[in-house]
Every structure is written in C-alpha cells, then in structure tokens.
Image (cartoon, rainbow, N blue to C red; front, side, top):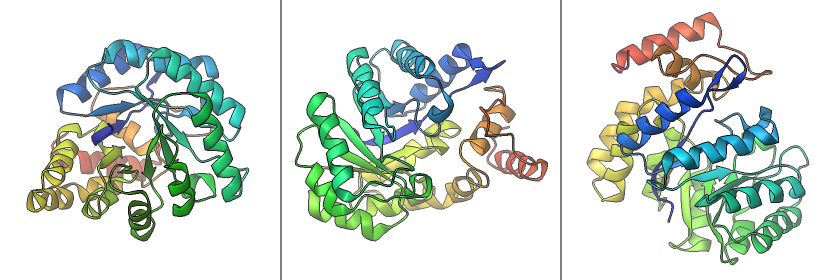
Length: 290
C-alpha cells in the first residue's frame, strides 16, 4: 500500500501560526512532481511542538488539499500510549490512509513494552500502521524480532527504518517477508535499503527536490539500478547537507531560500548558524534550485 517516494512534509509557520496558504502550495508542489504520499506532522513537521489542536488542524487540512490524490499517512506517535491512541483514532476518523507511529521516546521501554504499546493501538484502532524506528531521536531501537512479532498483527503493515543499519533492515526483511513494507527514513540510505528489499522512502529531501527523489526511487522499484545509482550519487551531497543541523532546520532554510515558506521554527529549534545558512544557499544554487 505504501511504496515509492513519500514526503515527510514540513509544517510552515507565519507569525507563529500554521501557514495554510504556504502549506497548500507545498502539497501541490509535491503532487505535481510525482510524490507518492504525504506524511504530515512527523518529526520533520515539528509535531513535538504543535498543540494537539494544531496537530489535528494540520491533518485535516492535509486531507482537504490532497483530496485522495495520494495517500496521507499522519504522524500520530507519542511516548504516552494513551496520547498515541487519541491521535491515531483522530487520524482514522478523519480519513487518513495510515498512521506513522514513532517508538516511545524518553521512556525507553523494554521490547515487551514496545510490543504492548503498538499492539494496543493496532487492536483498538483499525487503520494501517507504519512503525517508526529512529533511535537517534528516541534513545531506543526496536529489535527486528519485536518488529516481526508486531507484523503478525493485520494492520501493522510496515516500518520506517532510520537506524542507519543495513543489518537491522536486512533482518527485518528476512523475518517479516516481502509483504511487510520497509521504507527508508534516511535519504542517504534509501538506495542501499531498497537494494536489500526496501520499498521506498519517507523523505526529507523530497520537500525541496520531489521529482528527483521520486525518479531515484522509481528507478530502483522498476529494477533500473544503474539509473537509481546515478541519481543517488547526484543527490548525495544534498541528502547530507539537509542534516548539517537538526532536522528540519536545514530543509526549512532551503525552502525559505527558494521562496516557498517563511523561515519560522518552533522553539527550542532556531534558525541555522550564518555559516550553515551560507552552505545551504551554496548547495541549493549548485542544484539549480535558486
């Protein structure tokens, strides 16, 4: 169900509020350039600093503008199981095609705790669920064996993998089989992950280069590895530049330099250093984006 180039879309702000007009244009930019799905209110969408009302507003507005043209997979995770249940139920009731649920952060639950967290959500809310493993942000990595156990639940359909480990990805695929969707959560790892059986990416870089990321992913999906490799090498410097500071600081900086959004972040995130802003401006000029 969820394959290809899926964007982890930013949440634009203007004067401290959700900037709907800029967001509408970002969604149209994505869809017109071949993006296969939209993930609002994830880490890139600054979900951690949105109020619950804002979180729900962004989901509803995404659904309104997308209007079923591509799948919408809402970020609904939390380190509180009850809160994740509430957000996931809202996503289901609003009409989202799926939910992306990050491993509980800060609490550092045991494998049994992780299993019970996801199992409770999956059993109570009938929406396709993607697990999200990003230990650099959460302080914990979900074991492949736990993923395999969860994959037995009918509506847990895949995982966004951002552990940085091909061994982890390979073991998940070997344990879960080809019907379980593994998506890269790190742009620079997308091609390697697809080479061992991944089905695409939930991408930060697609915010600014949707057509190019889509081209790379679809080349790999069609077995045109030579083309996919060329695109990976072509885009690699951009992939790395987008993480010279904490995501989404660099990608929002690039979008602002491209004239697509205001450079507003929710504290404690702040604009990049002047040195890094100049680096980002230089690299998007190299890619012909400004």
